Amino acid sequence: MSRSQVERRLGDVGARLARLREEMGVADEQLAHLADEADDARLRVLVSETPLAEHEHRAAQRHADAMARHRRDLEAEISRLERTVDELLDQLSGSTSLPAPPITGR
Image 1 (tube, rainbow, N blue to C red):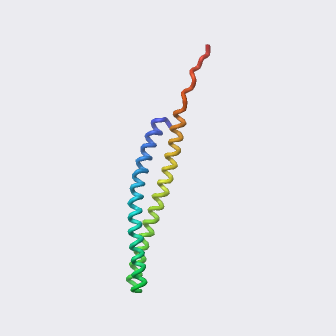
Image 2: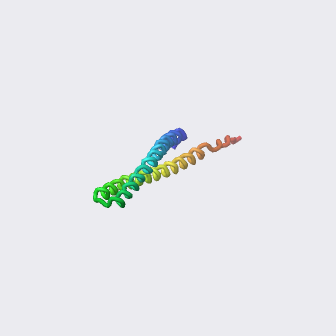
Image 3: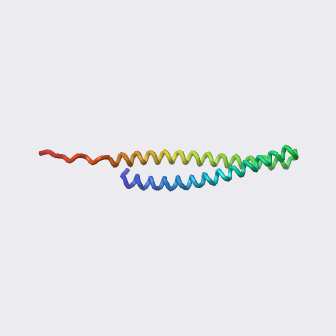
């Protein structure tokens, strides 16, 4: 890959990483909220012992579990892209080596 291609790809990957990190922040907030809701619903089950409360708890827990999976997926994608950035930087540093010495054949 040429230097300009590596730089362009590095920019693209960097932009994607920034978006995913923002999304991770949102997912963290949502996960905290959903986990709190699931905990509250669990307490309502213990206090009321009704089928409706149990149903609400299961639904709240499913939502929290789904957000936790989404967060893990984001984390895995961020890690993958960080490795890609490292590889691209290695390629970039390899392509900027010192110029070859001039040929003197006289």
